[in-house]
Length: 536
Image (cartoon, rainbow, N blue to C red; front, side, top):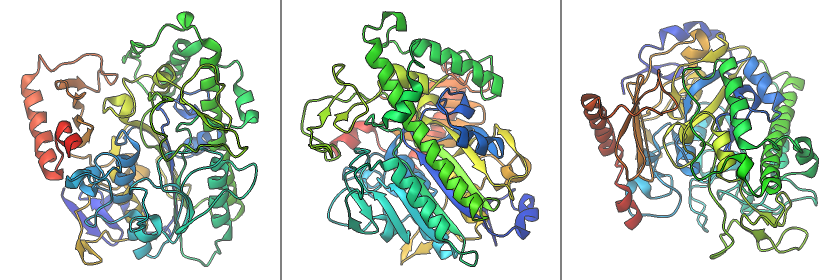
């Protein structure tokens, strides 16, 4: 990538001039908020019926991106956000299980630098509250947040866990236990973030806060007062919810009315034929309550900023790590580390999607299933894991009263790799060529600051994906995508972003052109065929 170094950090070569008016703006505080397993259409300002008034207000006062992308899965997304690189370049092309291949070692390598390390070197305070999940859970703490640039940390090292008694709960470098009987992890993260913000003095350096919720990732754990808000809301089922959301999305300008909604997943019955309606409704009620509670916490964080006079010059970024999750939780096999044997009340934890168990309480461990994941990703295809639009499309909100001049919808494509570039740019931090004696892989992202200023920026020449052999490249309106171990499919995203009309057979030259781009990128980042990765 061609880049220009300015006194404000790394920019795409055409972007530097457009940022000149922003030079006089004091460096902003930055809050990066990441939701976990949230679908494209779940929150209100992206078409959802779930009550998210705080996120909706941030969107109304800032920018809503319609074409922002993640890396389809927890660990790769977090590696990319933290480093400004594609996840393979950071060593986390898959999950955090150790493998012998450099791009899939499952642990942040030393040829990447984290956003916290960059921002701290630029004079920022650096704090993190939430889920880390870019290093194996072990006795070694070499890649824990405090060792990778965060001056304060409160959260979990592993990727999932009870909301009432999360495993690997940690403060700084020390393992801890929940500190009150009515503990709920989402609230604890919101409260910790609010406390740090409230303690900051006006004369202190600006802060970078990474607030990484586990909501609404399974297990389905929510407070009964929140669940009650959604009682009966899902009685018409997933078909009706998908149609409602799609209609609102069209009205909001998020999706083009010429893109038909994708068919219901073939493994899911019409709602009228679903035999376990009451249990299915409850699953989605709990999921909605988890999102609702996260939004309430974000509201408290924003209110703390407002009360302390910091809101106007704080850049708040909100997004999700992947699309809605269709994973099914079974009650067989060895108990994973993230599922406790007993709940805080002493009852055994009943795991698995068993319709005889009502989800929501601390002694349950369930997920919401394919039908509701299909609704979460309205109007797109597929889910977390896959790199069709349903797996990689995220809501992305940017709110900064002093700095965002071009508000409203943005149809500019963007990717997680751009977050490091944006934060370093606006914070006046320098992305290094070496760090602690190690050569650093050049930054892949481009700053979004021109979009905040003018609504436009120089686009990426292309954007790439690979996860579990699922692979894609997007160049302009064209997207080449494959579901492992299937063949390449070709889509014109301007005409067909819901990926219903495969043009590969009628456009072999375009397929060949984009396949060469992907292969060149794959060699550069050391992406491997999925069967080779699984054997390593």
